[in-house]
Every structure is written in C-alpha cells, then in structure tokens.
Image (cartoon, rainbow, N blue to C red):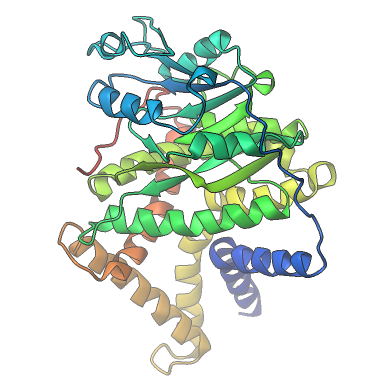
Length: 396
C-alpha cells in the first residue's frame, strides 16, 4: 500500500504542477528577478520600421476576404512598407479572384491542395522583406499589432514574436466559448511570464512573426506549423518574444463537438512536435528553454493526461482501504475527483444553454482538452491525421 501511496502523490504532483504549479513557480521566479533587477529587457528602438510581409495562407476563405482585407489595410503601419501576400493553393471557391485589385497585395495560387504547410513553404519563396508576419484569414488583427510586433524585433536576439489569440466574449457563451476564452486568458499570463523569464515556447498560428532569414522549409506532413517553425527558431539560439497587445481576434468554436475536432488535430500535432523536437528535451544543452518547454508543453501533450486517468483507480483503492465513507485524506481526494467529473457532466448538460455561470464550463472544457490528447495520440499512432485542415465551425 505504501508503494500505491507513492504512485498516488507522484501522479497528483505531475497533474498539479502541469496546470497550476508551473504558473505559480513562474510567477514567483519573475517576482524575484524583478526585485533584483535581473534580466532587464533590451531597449527598443522606436524608429525601427523595416518593410514587412503579412502572409496569409488560405483555403476556400471567400467569406472572410472582404473583412480580412479591410482590417489589413487599416493596420497602423506605413502602407508603403506593408506587403500583403496571400497563398490560396487548392481553393476552388474563388477566394483568389476576390483579392484582385487590392493595393500592396500579391496572390499566389495553385489548383493543387497540399495543406497549409505546403502553401507556406511555397509562399515563403516569394517573401523578400526581413520580417514576415503570419496570420489566418478568419481573424482580425488589433490596429497596432504589426507595429508592436516589429518593435520587438529591434532586439537582435529576438527571432520570433508571438501575438495573442483572443476569443470573442459574449454573455451567453456556450461551453466552447466560455472554456476557450478562460483557457486563453490563462495561457496569455503564462506566455507573458515565459517571455520575461527567457522565451515563449511556441507561437499562436493566428498571429506570429519571424525573421525571414530564419525560416526553414518544414516537413510536408507537419500538423502544427506555427509551433514547429517558432521552436526551431528558438533552437537556433534566438528567443521568442510575446506582446499581448498584438492580437488576433476570432469567434470560438460553434460548440464543443467542433472544438474537440480542432483540439484532437492539435493534440496529434503536439505529439508529432514532441517527437520532432526531442532534442529540446536536453536541459544540459538548452537550459531554461528546455525547462519551459517541458513544463508548459510536453507534460500537457504526453504524461499528464495519462496521470489523470491513472489517478482515479489508484485513489479509489486507497480511499476504499481507509474507508471510503469515513472521509479520510484519500477518501476526500477521491470524492473531490468524482465531484469534478460530475461538474464536467453538468457542463455537458448545459453546453448549448445560455447561462451566465461560465465557471460551470471550466471542468467540462478541461475534460475535453485532455480527452483530445488521448484521441490525438491514437490518431498520431495510426497516422490517420491529414495535413489538410478540416475546418471547425465557428460561432457567429
């Protein structure tokens, strides 16, 4: 029974560290560094204003072209220094035709569809500016986003900059919107602290930028292009910075079923990324970057979901051994788990019902996140995840 207790506390520690502990540890490290003025940021040159390319890989996005172009042309950056490049490979809905006539805009199109990464690899050959900024067709950018991102590149150590993904917040959000919105707020805090400690570990595909010279063609079966591209820049010795005021805004998934579809793909890509970036696990070579990468990413995509599954039977055996209805320590922890999963079940029941009690959706969204990792693992092992996006339906 003593061995089972050791297993229990090991499982619980990994779970708590992954989702809460790392954030707490990061917070206190940052506070201490601030007190002793360690890691002061490099001065930013406000006059740094190079030419940039806004790069949009799109497949059948005709419904978003007008809004995206209106938003892009209104961005606060010198118009003569902002080049807009669309790569519309495989589109058969006329997306490329709707882009004709816009100023400073170039469209590259092939009839063949080779996935987003195929379009990015091909399109990057046409980018001649020192900085390229990637954005999705269905997201709008904050007006100052380009300028804020470019300012961070004035520091020569910065090779990549990640913007923030923001979810449209409505009072009557369904579970996907409420859960996704809260998740990204927490992620934003972690990214700010990661960036202050050393480097962000991965960029959001909705809005991120790199120095064009650092782009390396990515394997054509890559599922998480943004993650692989940004982490390989970090592997080359550059840091990934983050500015939450450089943001891309989009609506949440229409419902949890659509969100699960999206996250299963991301999870399969996450496992693929861990395999391809396995050298980053070497803390002796990459130091702080490895610590951040393992704590913030690797555990979520590999070990922690398994720990959640194993914790249930282990805690039940311990609770049963001490008297499951006598409410000793292990019994209490077992019943708390049961209560949490009952709350997730309630979140499922309330999924598409308007409610202001958004906290009810957190357990449900947390469960869906970890379920997607399990499903994504099996999809990766079966090699059944297509490199072509199966678009998740978005809320109106």
